[in-house]
Image (tube, rainbow, N blue to C red):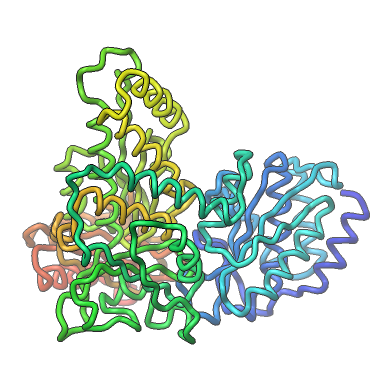
Length: 561
């Protein structure tokens, strides 16, 4: 590394000393902490993003400043890879080391070592481009400055500020830039609105959707999503959206509002009341990468009927399966119609057992991965169409490039034979879905538009959707242990292989309950073991969870030592 680059790193990093006594680690959500502790971390994340761009042959990298559904005083930073997905796991240990280096000299030494090991071309020989975004948190502006300083401390690296955006918008922009297509915020809105219109135009003429059903009320979590939905809704026809908690009326980000709150507490967010009985409602999270729906069942209670990520996944799966079966109908003898696309549905062990059973009964291939979006996305990408969701409302649909190419040529073939046939409409619908859904990451705005158009296509109310299946009652508990690494799991975290004997004990407990299912897994961040249990009644689920928690304590807890 040349002297100019070394002295630039030493002088700029001296302006961003790390906080004393704080150790941060890079997880699925990037780095997150109280915003007051993050100046140094975000500066160093800027360096990380610039190096990642150089490593990836000058591909565009994203840097997003957000703490999603955390409280407003927190903030965070995460990196988007060239695909628009998350930072490669292979780079996470370097991210941790970078964030926690105690001095400018340590930092420089780490960078020199890593650049050599990874063969990264420095000295400004190649340009590095980083797109920056932030959510609406007040701390975002000064943290953005720190990120810019980090980026410009690598010679030849350029920061492009995309302003206040949702997390999924930034990921979408990174993916689009690297595919060589236009990637401004307006391009994002235009792609969503035009593919939504295309799907609306293809709704069968007999579909019934009344005026009450046509209204949607959205809780914007007092965050960036509500703000952006206000812009997007002006570009849409055929959809009446009212946005509440848009952040403009003095509400606090994520306080008693947002998808995380609604999904966990199962009560109405602030700004909603008994006047909303029977209306279709949706809730975004703070940076608009999660979406849940709900309805208010009665005037006398703040409880809701929740439609979580499992049910959103089920709705998408029903629709896509229907289009594929129309497309593959007999009666066409051309060679191109013999292709059988593979559709995979990906869940984690936390998905409600009733949803997995429902999807299997539809004849779908249902697979489980360990908890975490990176595992779900990776598995979904192995299919022609992979649909994944977590119950918390984070998920998307991934289309393989070869399948999209096949769809395009199939559509051209069908239009030359019988233009406007049911098969051609099915091909057009699937192509429109591939453009409407954000294939980089879960996106509450694009997900919401897809839900809305499918409900209209099916002629379903939110109540009809809710009744696809009935969730099994479940309970989650945490058990404090001395060492969480003593639990080792297999089969996508559904089986505990260590300590010896614990799984057999869990199986014996579970067998006592009708429709019983339970698993344990170590937390990723603290010395606790998480327990999940479900059964045919709430009382049974609670009892099973408590029994399994006792087993964990016997095998691993403080009482066992």
